[in-house]
Image (spheres, rainbow, N blue to C red):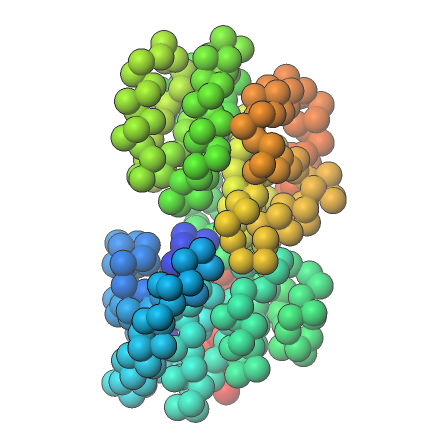
Length: 364
């Protein structure tokens, strides 16, 4: 059996794709899997690191801020379509899986044209443009949220949740082990800040503005800055006496980070939301305003409306960040309410459900 998986651009697309591939391999280790991604994007690093082969296309999305950069877009698209057509011919997949992001467009269109069945996995509560375009060609669409009929044919939809890395689902780590790993103190409240795989400028600036207040309040922070922000943040921290603020470019042991955290501050990308439901942590979402159709706000509100999370607008973060985080750190009753409600929204076996359905469709 040969399966093509395409998409990427952000960790929110890439990590679910890897989780699906790992689930397929658990079912049948002889399955041959090929990824197709975008050159220069996160998938070109993370997919090979997970043990899978990937081919990169010179894909690019529409530039909304600088429209002049879109001049070369048609030429890149033609090249991607030509490359995708050759990949499908050479690899001859039994089924093609799209996980969103502009890299999936050419590969999935070429698959459909070649008569290869296409399935999609939509991580967000607001469907991405690429998946909305490809939906007409798909035989099945796996969704993480209810009420997705406004984007897709209801007969094609299967509610599965988002695939999450096995180390998050099967997290057997002890809290003491997690605290020791991050060099944290047992007697202090721990806040975990995750701004997505690439970091988040607003969250980083907000923490830096209030680092001394957090230190004085007895709050320690595990701070994933993103690699682009890390060097400047580390230099600034060296000038401040804040030993309980632990900055790092990327957290490899997210299972330990969740185990150590009492409160989480996070962007509300689809993968982060799904992981936090499984981790069962009280969370303050700060949705990114720099995403299509403001889908991160919609993701966050899906939980806020069920008393399963709090939300702070990106535009208000620099002013209110410390107050909102500090209040939740002190309010154990509110923490318990949020924990209990967010756990109810977790779907633990999403990648296995999707993998089995992919194989059934391929065999048909």
